[in-house]
Length: 264
Image (cartoon, rainbow, N blue to C red; front, side):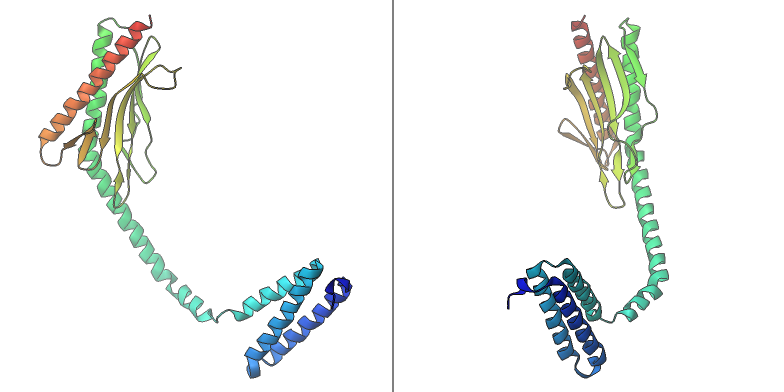
């Protein structure tokens, strides 16, 4: 039989009759022979699908889609009891979730306090040294304009804090000495290191003139130029670290003065 030669309206009619017959048999005889009835229903819908695809009849295609959707619904497992169990457990699960979140928050707060106690004094020392040494430069007669930002964060929980916060900018003859702070990102069981960076740059250029200092602050140690400083055992590690930071600040000031004077 050539399905393309059949009137589409007749196909829709035939399909509707087949669907009605199959659905009737499925509903009325399910208890007697559900498997056989379901098979006949599947065969009827499959026939409709072949007719729809071969003729391109959109109405018939919609009938097939609707029928398939209903079949999926009738085939699903009886899970009402499962839903009721879920609903009954919601109060308990909610309380457990709240306790878990509170535990995570407490762990993050403890890690935050430990990190800040270890590194905030060092970072504040670096900023103060930056200011003090530039004040000496200004007192010598050099025309240096210093811009300060005091509201920067050493660390933040989750996504709090800031990336490359511009803490200080010393400008001389169009050359800038910049001090950046990137917050450590604190999580309940880990942290992403914070950083303190100094660059010398000319704003109209795309690359820095120099990068005299880059400090990474992990929880128990810091690193400068590939050298690691363990500050967990004694104060000696911290002292060595501050010496390395001061050297980086001095190098930055030197680069600023040389490049700025060369532009006169």
